[in-house]
Length: 234
Image (cartoon, rainbow, N blue to C red):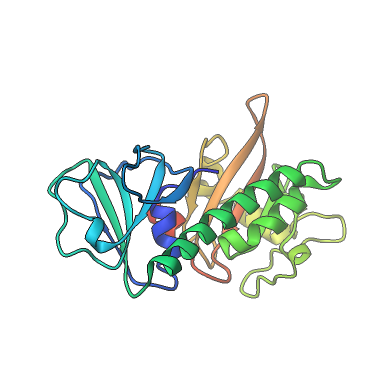
């Protein structure tokens, strides 16, 4: 799984102080990190780990992640730098590779979940550590295909539990059916934002389609922790 600079920066900033120096908002996605070595043949899809003294005006264009802030930033739009403060080169390499391993393991877990007897529940379970919140999946008839309670989680401020027949409680169904914003999302493609006015907590949703027909919706809500980077796109 390739990662973009914003995901890497977000993950590293959970435990360190990071800064990004770039003239571009459209950095490439990175397949893996590598230490910057003399004579390295640059690849735009590699994130190069370096020391502050490796940063200079005549360096090759690319994206670098640096152990501590360099003294000067090259005046070159083709060079992007992420600095991580208070770390050694060895520590930085471990931090960065841990991020890549985290998402690679998630990617593998999602593939394995496809072969599970209950793939949606398995995919939701293995995604909890990535999003920090539980995931629900409800079909167009308000049948809960994946319930938050099946992930050992509780929605204390809102009753999203399912009835014995597997459906969302009728009072909640009526609330959604009468909400113009909720209904306007039925044909929405791609991720969309659930506002805090619709639920006691904001979140993200994605519709599932079969033969261009809306069949279900995946919801990730900020019931436990802030979704962070994901919410910054909306």
